[in-house]
Length: 371
Image (tube, rainbow, N blue to C red; front, side, top):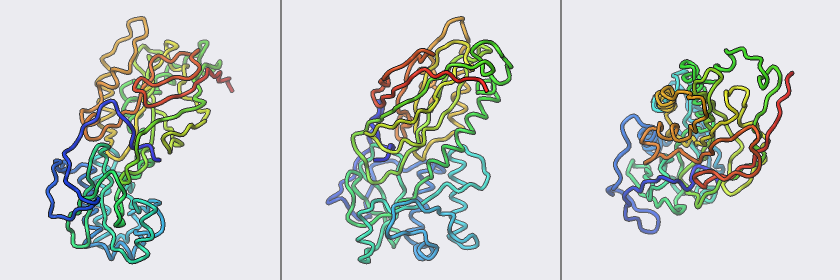
């Protein structure tokens, strides 16, 4: 079960549509407010309507609609010098903007069959719907579009009988680019990993003489359900402590192997590097990228919050400062917070339950020898 639907400490509930038998055809009124113009949700909704209607034949001829696989297909596969190709490029540029990522030509948009059980219906000739993959964990309905461009309300809690294609963001690629945006922004303000490198320290505990790190030997995240309408999320951590110069230092680490809830993984990954910290203590906040994350906003929020924290000669836990810095939208219709762990030290070992109760990890001290 992908990780993008997980119990949160803060959730919001949107108004429900009355949906009978899992499907009600528009015209129907949504009780939920429409997505803000220019948001990832608005962009994918608009493109889903186009792929279902005016571009349906072009999408099929371009090989975008697979009848047998739920694997994502890059929408950039559409021919460039066509109306469909131009619409996809425009949508990709809009998504990059909405996510605070550089306009470097990267294509993040994909399309896939929502559930493997839908393949048989497609083979029998059923006409599919197209829907955007929502970033709202608590929604009760999903808006899809039929060949005539009409809205179709689908129940979010059960797989519809009619096949559905989902337009969504490549979360793994977005995360890889997004964490670079965050690292670069933090480094420009002296809050990133460049702090330790620039110090040139060769004191005991530095990289030159070896240092202690925290090794993640196992990790497990919990969830209570798996909606059919959401794609995989990508997990990353924000690790924070006081750098060698006394400023808060923040780093991001990707955990790309975390595919399923309720499953224990054994990565043996180094999660915290204490050679970059003044104290032998650090905090971890775990987040997820599920399509709607804006990394420019995240970097700005972290920078504004953490620049105000001054080293007073003793370690101050930084989890609350990070959580308070998160944009309000991350606690309402697009919650990206997963869990947090306070004050890991160079001697911390054993099984640790996250503060929010969503994650459990086992760690051990690890000595990193010099080259």
